[in-house]
Image (cartoon, rainbow, N blue to C red):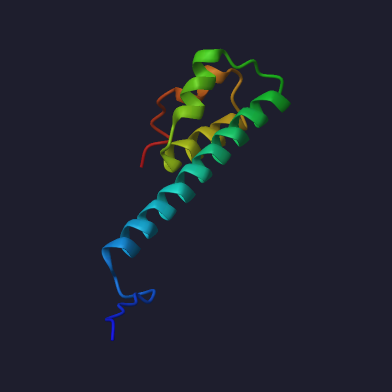
Length: 92
């Protein structure tokens, strides 16, 4: 008779925890990529040129709060550089 160990979901095994951490990280990365894409699309549709260094800064950002702030700013900015301007009205 062999001892068979089964691991059912929800039992908090190390394997399960690592798997779920990786899955959560993947979702966050996907949301960040999507957010960056939306920012660049808004700027493009508004006819605002985006220099390569700014494009790189936007696409390399992984902070969802920052991307949300930049997206909001992309709706009214006159230049791509305005996404990064510190404004006391934006701070809580």
